[in-house]
Image (tube, rainbow, N blue to C red; front, side, top):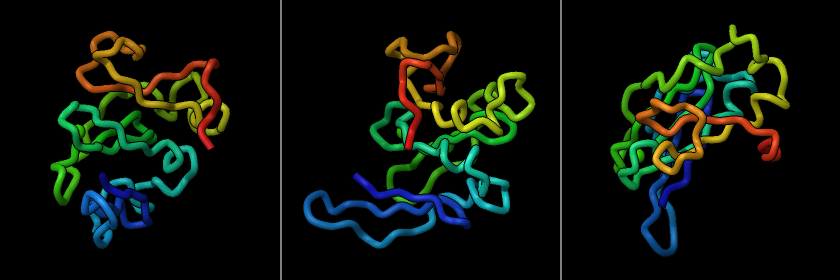
Length: 137
Ligand SMILES: [Ca+2]
């Protein structure tokens, strides 16, 4: 278990001791930064921590102007380089993912191997949108 949050310099994580406390937060990724353009709510509010490769470690994914990007966790101290999971959901999409919170706030990360994903050829879990789900707060 770990606690995670985004700061202007990237993603900070603190690992749990398994029972009573978390260690100190350290920088696990210098991606997802303000300098990389993630300071806008249409980007930072979509950051989530799904386990996209099903190894038991929470990874990090979020919407970027170019689409959905993820970075895999090593489970101990860092997220790896950004992987473009899909170029769908980009700012140039005719479906307005950047300006309308009622769209980008609905991005959730499903599991490709459970069939609740809308991308048939996914090797990673990908976000999906449905009006049946409430927007994230
Ligand atoms: Ca993982």
